[in-house]
Length: 259
Image (cartoon, rainbow, N blue to C red):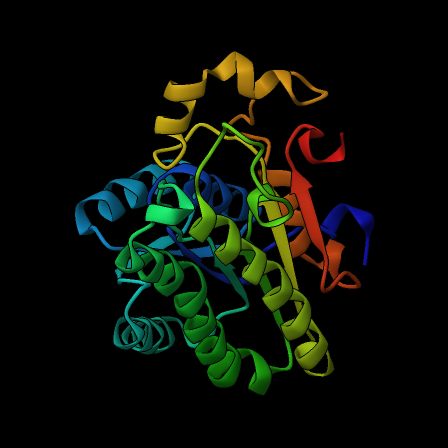
């Protein structure tokens, strides 16, 4: 294969959860710009319709399916619909996630369950179904899980109070390694990105509380992540350029986790 084609996604079908906005939509753009047929999923149909229109304006072939990642039956229905419409899934990006802020001693149990149901349980259910029903039979697949630098470390005193989120993202990290070990024999790679601080709906409150300069000041590159900063890494793991990379976690954080 020519090195010019290593990042080509032509002929590939990609499913991206949490794909209606933020990092999910950015990754949909990246894969779609390289020729992938993109299916985005989230809970709200109106936001998905807007995202689909945006992707189509870029010349991307895009479809959407509304689904709730915290509910197993919704994930099964999502897979049913996607396979009925498109026949297979070559690339799965598990991006949907949620967080909750509270001191550990007062963290509500229902909030803990909410975070884990979406960030871990839903990710497992969808990966299992896509693997069993598409990737394993086809002996090809790229799974990309969106973890977080919060899953690589704790929180400094006086900063975030997100014990459920950190713990769930740490679970995503080792889920990635473990699944890579099991499914490599089927021609499936499983990797994770660990973003640092990117402006998003989830991080909006933290940025407002701590301040953009304070967050960026702790990173060697001295800035938050931008709209283009996750695209290259996602494309690497989703394309043939990353065909010999599996079980890896790549921090995309401006160097925050390195110092």
